[in-house]
Length: 478
Image 1 (cartoon, helix red, strand yellow):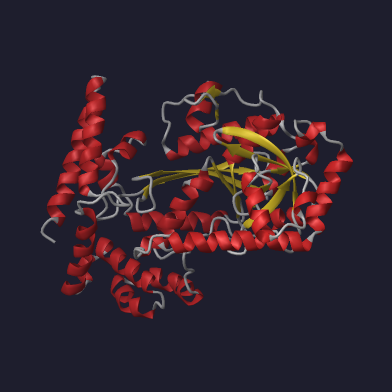
Image 2: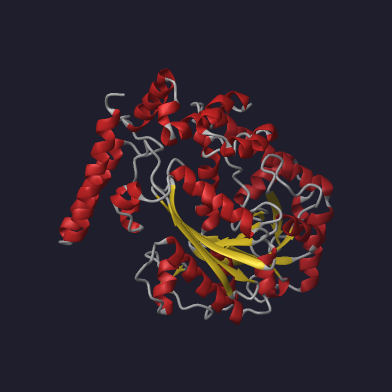
């Protein structure tokens, strides 16, 4: 890939009901030389309650949150346009696979925009944190590191920036954090020129799948309870290595384990035996998560694999790759576990915002998005009935409520406002931020700031509290 986009987001909350309020990116060539930068801020969507802690962390004042040049709708449109213009590219964040990636999905979904444009062909995505874990595991002197509270090596962006002696005056702003990630990746690339292409290979899902099919034995790096661990593994039978329910999960065998005594066990016996193994014999590679797959030589240097001869390891790999019945039994075990999990899953109705991964948006609706966005607000309202998916209709209604409320019929305006009020005025502990939860959080933060005699933070918290009160006042009579 000739272009790499290193990006970061700042958000109003840490859950999928929250909104991205800042997006920053630096575009580089394949040698990590800078081509351009992109940075944009958006206002908080109408009817959303922000987290006081999040606003303190990313240095967002109430003025920035409410008086910026771009509404949330315009802000997401600008990010989508950036993705389209920069494509094709490889997108890299820091810990993005577990946070920024999901927040972009959620915000694009709620904005009636295709959620996956930045990492579907011709684009791809990987995680700088995974790259750092692999580099640090292969050579612990790659980056200067501190320790977490638990005493493990910290690869958090802020910690690494401090340890490298970078200027962190603007940390937790999106463009600054993108630039920090770039500087760290440059260090890694310089010290791991021979492995750099391997670090990037799993950004492309199809390449990962090809590696799993073709490679006999290879090294993977995982973070287990805060520690980076190296495993020598082999894919199980290529026709039966994928989870029967979770299509992106591929199962691999830890070559420290001799599979021969397990090959002829019944399903029940195999399930029981696998459960007792620690470390576990079966590990998972998620083909859409940019997990590192490296040459076998790295794990072969480490115990317990260095204590085994290569022929023994190859024999174990061949046994799990070629025993179809054994691998079918593993699939049965995984299917039953997934079905049991589904049965015990909460039966409460999910809100539309929670259903992106539960149900695909129909192609007919995604094809309509471009026309819908380019239409006038009056036409957007008329076109809502054209969406096959009711979620798209609801999101469209809410966008119009936030951007052009004057064109909504009074009954529809009242219904939307009442639904927002129902959520944010709830007295329960919800999955989203409520008014009550916001006040409690602010009280806690005030106590902490008071103990530190931090007058600046106390003033910021007063401003946030006033803003929350204004939201409450507007919706308490809905």
